Image 1: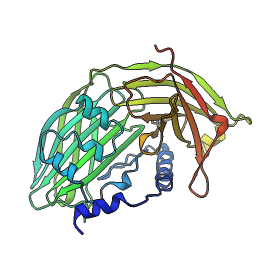
Image 2: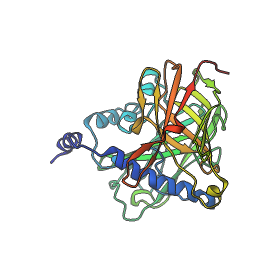
Image 3: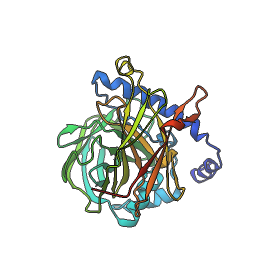
Length: 341
């Protein structure tokens, strides 16, 4: 079976997306709670937070993806293949900045192709080429990581997806949502670091300056809340930010102090519905936790919106023992978006 036939067969598979994402979220929650130790782990593929990255990295690439990558230097259409929530906006408004900087070592070349930054999210695309071939099945696993202004980043939401284009080319897509909006300012210095990648020994680094996308940003501070009848949980919508690369919702979750002490604090899944009935969930919604807040400061990231809705309804849920979501009706929250600051 060739790649094209494989891709067609994959399209016909009924993927149990809810169970798959429940499994992913379980791993994410465990990793998040272990942040209390303060240890940073580097891996060749970063932790996937809120994204179903397991569906990527299969080694099979669609014809459209291969055609897009063949037209270097611009590879904007790749974001659709990596399921980035801003892919339509990126393509429509040409939001990516062309970088085209590279570093080489012992036959491996790392090229940063494009990047975009809007104060709350950062997206970077990297292409690796190897003289003696590349494979995602590394015998000795190296690691790569990203720094901003010389410091490693602990994002609220972060993922890296990889896929091979041919026997000598691999594409890599980084996306980060930061713990706080605009915590890095208008201009940042980004660097992609790699060591012993894909069986090639040596360290690689590509650094480049990046300016925030110039676009409309709208901020709302609704400060509405909902609580359970037993006062166990309280959910507060603190802020909603509309920016070029996302719609961001900052939430405060209050829970009993003993849950913080014994590391059993809750992790809620969400779906979001606007006043027209448009539902944002699964791959249209990312959920994360601000660094160091242990579940108290949650962040929801939706696709960017050209038109600001009058309200958003948040529907939190918990995952039951069977791996399915159960809505928590008491914490359902209508967030008005009528007055911004």
